[in-house]
Image 1: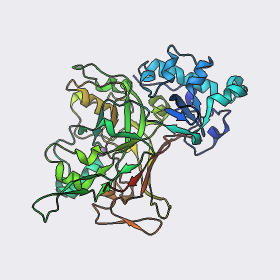
Image 2 (image 1 turned 60 degrees about the vertical axis):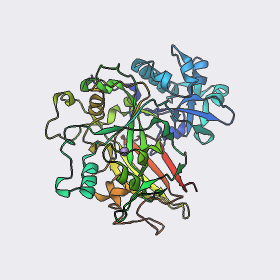
Image 3 (image 1 turned 90 degrees about the vertical axis):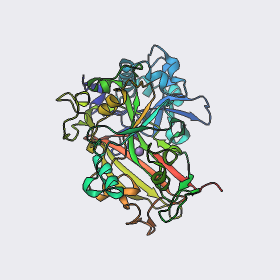
Image 4 (image 1 turned 180 degrees about the vertical axis):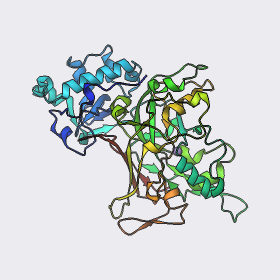
Length: 432
Ligand code: MN
């Protein structure tokens, strides 16, 4: 079943919140992403929707009777989980009500100054919280270009992809407890590393700290243990998407990953953006995924005629602390991903593994085929062999203390973009 476009997707819609109508900003009335926030005056977390430079406080407009929902207490919550658990018909109905409330020709909230003062919060005055309570976090490895680059670097350029890669959406179980929201600082991890010239490893601060440019999807309805999700039904189980930075300690990873995969090299932190962009908001931007050869096994096959990719422009910006000068080090697009979100979820549950509302699935590093489209410093500098020169003249092989990394993402419409906001983190020195 494919989601239909409706009045909320109309490219000509405008809002009485004028900042939402500015070309090039992330949160027009066609987007309406969900997040959780507090302010200095309001310590109770509320669910809100980003619109232009402000947040619409859903707890306030629900209490005032302007949004109707069968359980309004879901908006006075420290996570989106209770709202998400109400199901896709409710997500869609609430989106329609919010779109109607914010459109330029609706005076109900527009002309109610006292309520507006309570219900609209400048984003600059809000602190965003982790939007979902994440019970499980899984990270995939679904960019063919990324897997080819890594295989070329560490194994054999002639046989870069391992034999299973074209058959399985490769993934591993990540660490949910260290998934953090944008703007949480990242402490440089310590761990075991071993130089090729040494017999024994040493323990100390990571020397090859890296990013991984990824997106993540949030499970909107789970599956029972023992009951797989079919590929053709998988998208109905997805609530929305975020930007995700899978911070990685490459020197620790190299030593520890055989035979069971990454562990401490990944578990110290994973940053996500605070606004969850719904699959409904992304519906106008669906595109086909790359042709797959060989044809996947039957349980991983897409239904013909349905687009399983999403056209999302992605960028990574590195800003050193000393100069404060930003450098865009990567520009790429999510549509290049080989394995789709539907295939990832179908494969994840094909064994009978259950998933739950709020579970997070990382796409894997998103790399294109050109050098400046690679989604990690590992690839951008070819494991440090070709340092990047930044706009302030300094060079990088891997991240230095004080570096701030910002991921951006947006789907481009005719006169508007459906954007993801920021996924940002700054590197703090290692302890000790
Ligand atoms: Mn990753």
